[in-house]
Length: 234
Image (cartoon, rainbow, N blue to C red; front, side, top):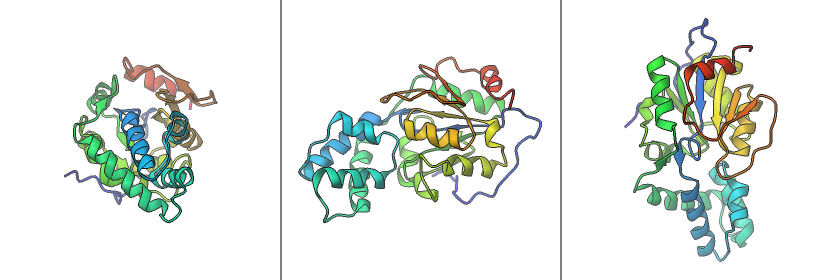
């Protein structure tokens, strides 16, 4: 069991380092799990008497469990249930699908390994709740990250900037000198609004261009020099 805690004291990073940390989303960014979420959503919606479409899934990519729960209730008319109850049912289905392991996104493990070898702090910043994080990221290992922020450990989840602001604060880092990596609209909004230089690697959804966001097709070939160049003028 990982010893990473949501109550870690704030620490400081090397002040002279231009790139102070890399903050990484999980679902769709490091692991290929969005299709598993889609399957779980569709199965649960059908159980509750509704139909889940590709458009429904796209509208919820990157969202936390309770907002998805509210969405499913509206789609199915299951108003006798609370968003938390639906979220718990959704999580149970997703966890069962994770038993076979989640496939890693191209370049994900190599990037995390490179950061560890270079001494650049890597933090996992996910909307997924803590109970699922360790299982979901097993292909890389939660101990590969210096810290992790889960969706049920923040006052406001993505697209609010709180998850990324909290990650930077706990490192003692300047968000503007952190690089965030995201795959969804809500995730990019969260990271960019926190002030992080954000790498968008669109997976299942289109992401509109905005200031402070650079786009890549994948994480393959990401190197330290390029990451440092992104914050060179900040």
